[in-house]
Image (cartoon, rainbow, N blue to C red; front, side):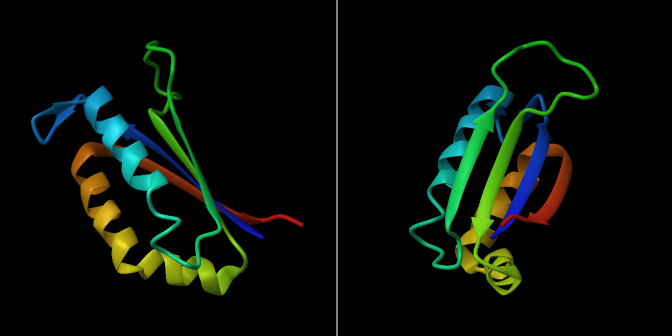
Length: 103
């Protein structure tokens, strides 16, 4: 199994919405992907629950699981994923990613 972990910092305001509003929309969009993308086994989305701001803190986290690297690559370019990516790019200031294999 491949785990794809992404952490984002959001802009304070984007698309006329607050950081909190955009985080909730991101969560909804990300959690809606598994039924639309067969290569995606599952997603877990977390939104930062504490309001303390520091350089190390991110606002939202995605943990996506795919069976193998081929499925991860297919997920990355899937049109439904690209729709979500388009929104995310409009509201984020930073992004960090790691992919790793589990047993």
